[in-house]
Structure formats: structure tokens, C-alpha cells
Length: 501
Image 1 (cartoon, one colour):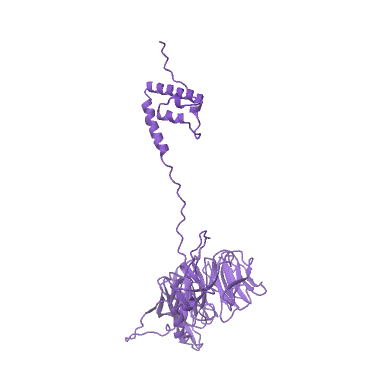
Image 2 (cartoon, rainbow, N blue to C red; image 1 turned 45 degrees about the horizontal axis):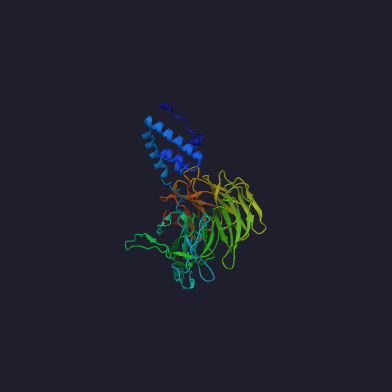
């Protein structure tokens, strides 16, 4: 009998199939080293192919490769039979806390979530609130009991201010991390700033010093009447509307809202109206006067709006080409004109009715302008602060050069933080803090000289006189607001020499 030579037969074309194509049943049997019979194969081609596979298997057995191939196939088959891992669903980062505001509606109010991004899921309906049944807020009760603020601390004209001294009381709210804006109306003070938080305090009794029996002045700390998060971003401005319970606020979330502080539910005041379409970026500054609002934004625009009869905020006009950079500050000069400034280093005085520029001061500073203020006694005097260490006082009747430049209040050449100097005592003085400085500085607007500079132990984020004529200044620091008043002396026949830098 002729013996066949043991030769390795070449694999067929089907066995050399590129990866990714479907395998036939016989291919699978090859990998498993299983036996197949011709009876269960109907196709002649498949029968021939099966015979070729068995011959190849016999050759591999003679070469001692069958066991190794079997083990390899077991590993391969086990790997193939594993379930494919499920695709991991992309998870969004947790959203920041969203404040729920209670908006006014004809039949009540519904808490509305405010988010920077549009949500694709419907918001769950909240139960309607009948505000007529909600009790008056602590703010409302305080105003009814205390009335207007005592202004007896105004300094008469026959006295000179020598320096400022700390008064023995302060306002405290642990949630008020930093204040960027303050306002006073009647017997109320409001402060707003970091993380969209705002606090309202009653300050009727602040001007009454409390003394111990031994004559030493005791420190008195006053808690807020209302403390709530009103915006998703930091608050740039808070202001009472015409000595009423209505409060208007603007923030870095690009929203302007009006709040009725006479009603509060779960610590949140009632939201009378809101508008998030005035700007396409965060709002750096806002000022209201007689129902008209001006706002300045990161979108480089100044927008004029008005408050309607139902407290709604309506856009009147957008000044698109007034500034070429971020608008950092806007302030009404009078009922018709407003002042604006920003990163383009220019100061613009604009007529809101004719919508034309009245005065333009280009390159007013060597750096971006962060703040402008209008003298309460003379609206032609404009104070400006920038990212340089110089305050400038301009007279709009001769704006080519500043009337005075005030220096020495900042301990750094480049200013990184926004600080807001303020006119004080009916525009006679300017009071300011400074970058990296714990000193409170006071300048005279008549002579341009430094009156005093005293170390208060911290750098205020905001300064605000209690009124245009008041001699008391509120200074905001972390979680607290402190107060300072003047140390005065009778005016001598010879003018007091003022402290030089």
C-alpha cells in the first residue's frame, strides 16, 4: 500500500479571509478542532472544504500542534464570547446651585429656576404662591417701626474735618463674603456682591452710640433683616428704587431684576420682574434714576431701559458704538444725561433723549477705567478710577485735562481689583481705599490735597456714605460692614494746614 507523504496542505482562499468578514460554520469548527460529517453538509463545495479542513487537522496532530491550537482557540473563543462592555454615558458636571425666585403673576407666583445654559428637560411645576397670604417680611416690619434714617451726623459748614474715626458698630452676615455695591434708603442699607448674595440691614439705631457704665464704647453687631442669593453670578449693583420697598439688582449673569422686599418666602424676596435679554454678556454696572435704567456690560454696549407700571423692565435703546471695550461703569449725571467708562480708557457723557454724545474724554487714563462718580453738589465734576494708581477729577466744562489728580492711596502700581472711590459730605471730599493698602484716604475737592490717610487694618471692597450730606461712611469687608465718621474741629481764622503726601 502506498503511503501518502505527510505534507502540509495550503490553506484555501476562504481560510485566508480578511478580518471583519463573517465566518462560516466550518471555520468555527476548525478553530474548535471539532469533527464534522459529510452527511450534514448539503453543498458540494462545503463538503470538499470540510475534507480539506480534516486533512489539515490530521497534519497538525502529527506535528503535535493540535493541543496548542486547541488551547489558543479556547482563549480566543472565551474572549469572543465576552459581552461587549456597555458604552459609558457621558455625564455632565454637576450644575451649580440654582436659586429659585418667586416671580409675580396674576394668580400668584411660581419659583423659576435660572440657569446659564438652556435645559432640554421640562422644569417641574411648583405650587402656586398666594402672596396675599404671605406674611410681611422683616424688612417691611422694620421700616414701619423705625421710619427714616437719622441724619444728625451731618457736619455743619463751620467745622473742618481733620481725620476719620471708627464708629462702635458694624453689620454682620456670614454669607456676605464680599460686597461690591451698597445703597441706603430710609433706614435700610443693602449690600450685594460675591456669589450673587445680597443682605438688607436696618440701620436706624446705628448713630446712637451705646456706652457702658465705665464710659467705654461697646461694639455692637447687627444681623441682617434679609439675606438671600439673588443672582447666579456676582452682583455688580444693588439699589433701592425711589425710597420704596422695591430693590433693583444686576449681576454677572447678565440679568436685571426688581424685588419686592416687603414680602419674603423661605428667605427669598418676591421677584416683581426680571429681564435677561438686555445684554449678551455679564453686566458690570447699573444705575436707576426716576424709573430709567442704564446698564454697562462685557458685550461693550450701554443699554437704556425703563420700568413700566407693572414693574416690568423694558429695553428702550442700545448704544452699540459708544465704547470699543468692556463697559465697567455707568452713572446718571442728571435725568437726561449719563456718564460711562470702561476698558477703552474713554469717558463718555451721553444725552439719553437725543442719544448723542455731549462730552468725550479720550485716553482719560493710562489703563482701563473701572469707576466713575458724579459729584452730588456739582454734576460737572466727574471722578474716575482706573487700573492705574491715580484718581482723576474732571470738570466737564474744561475736560481737556483733569482738574486734580489724587495719588498715594494705592500701594501697588498696577491695580488688579476694582475699587470705588466716593464723593463725601456733599462733594467736599473724596474718600477712597486702594490696592494692597489698608489705609483709608481722604482728599479735598477744592484744593486737591490730601486731608488724611489712616490705617484701618483691612482693604475695603466698597465705600458708601449713608447719604450725600451724611458724614458717616460705610466700608465693606469680608462678611461685615463697618462705619467711620469725621473727627472735626471749629474753623479757625487761619485755614488749617492739610496733610501732605
